[in-house]
Image (cartoon, rainbow, N blue to C red; front, side, top):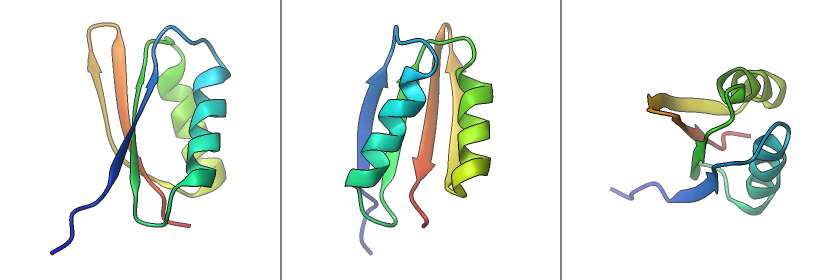
Length: 78
């Protein structure tokens, strides 16, 4: 069984819209089935990532909050 490649993307201390801009750029560079783990501190990140997921039809695997950090794992499915 192959393991899924997970790319790390640290968007800490970046404000909207930069985390989404960086995610969109990273998604252009990865293959279908690969995932991106995004760490962000922007208070609006959860709403922003949910909107981006709806717009792009990618898959949100998980979203967690650890203190001020928010961590989203997103899979490229199209």
